[in-house]
Amino acid sequence: MTTIKLHNTKTRKKEVFTPIDPENVRMYVCGPTVYDRAHIGNARPVVVFDVLYRLLRHVYGPEHVTYVRNFTDVDDKINARAKESGRSIGEITAETTQWYLDDMRALGAMDPNEMPRATQYIPQMIEMIEKLISDGFAYAKDGHVLFRVRSYKHYGALSGRSVDDMIAGARVEVAPYKEDPMDFVLWKPSSDDLPGWDSPWGRGRPGWHIECSAMSEDLLWKKPLENGQLSEEALKHPHTFDIHGGGNDLQFPHHENEVAQSCCASGHAEDGGGFANYWLHNEMLQVEGKKMSKSLGNFFTVHDLLEQGVPGEVIRFVFLSTHYGKPMDWTAKKAAEAEATLRKWRKWTEDVSVVDEPWDEVVNALADDLNTPLAISKLHTLQKSLEIGGHGAARFKASAQLLGLLTDDLGEWAKGVDLSAYEVLLADARAKAMETKDFSEVDRLKAALVEAGVEVRMSKAGVELLPAAGFDPAKLEGLL
Image (cartoon, rainbow, N blue to C red; front, side, top):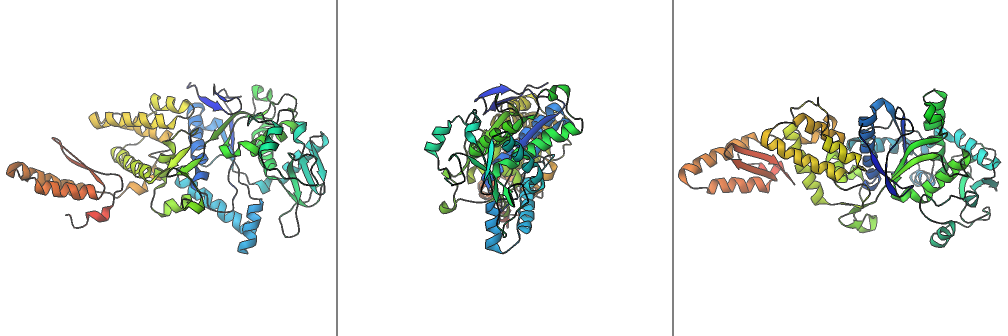
């Protein structure tokens, strides 16, 4: 079996991934707050963990992997959007949730096994909060419930910070209902114009952090336990699953708070164990070398790119060209190069039905901490062997599909490009030029084709034309 190695934020080193139960590999990834379109930075973790999901399914079998990604559909940003738009919260969250799913599917992301909404798990959150209060890890005051950060001695271990350093280096809310500035909200009161649920502390709504703890506990521990899906080995690791992931910006405070409340609620306060064994965080995204921001005019959503005609598969390729652990720079040049590569790969494999296993070199690259740039490099090497002999096309396509590329559902954008008439035109012009020794017409046609974004290849075997970076079929009008 393939050995997978992952960089574990928890230990700050690359480790061999050993699932608690190879028959039931469990992964939780933090999803979006659904109040608007997802920008391209939001999409990076989706693509990263989609590749990990595909790899886990390949190694352990599709039926042995459970992937959970949540939707935060109760949040102050959603409340503010409803107030300013005059629309109901339910309308906004339903619409933006569907937007998100449509956009991520356009990038080739598979749907997770479970996609829970926070509002579906309010009772589980209340139950967890009650347990934290009864065990002395949380307290209620003025309709709020807060977690006592200093009651959990391992707080800060995930992000590598001490509580005192956090107070010195961060803006923390000072409120009269807090015992300590670092204590964070588990439950807060709701006025009549805000979403709210009845609770032992009055009508209110959950804080942000508690939702992921409650949903991961329910879907990756309690339900498998109730359904008899946990092995004897898994039962030795109560309230624990394999992988928790998300963007690097969530490491503190969101993931740090998740660890604290989950460990304390499940009886792991002293040893700091339980919850997730492996933590993965992807780095952030830039645009043309600068931080993405509306003020710089370089802020755009996935939907914006799709509407501008950038194929979802191209966006995915650009994302995968940088290792998830490094900052990624989105540039127009990278998108054009990705488009040219994918057009070429799709042309070579358009008649291939995948009936083969992916190449070991590609699988091993992904197994080495999701080294997608290396996997793509290996595909380029395989591509050259295709150029030379045309063998291994099925394995090439299977290998690309392990990265979520060259899948049938992503290929519409590359169809309908038929350059055969231009190949005949150029071949005839070259044949005449060989007789007359006048290559001016050949040069003129080549220049026009290149200007239209066509890669021109001429050899003894004949003429081959491929759509390349910036291909614009409109520029070919009048050439025939």
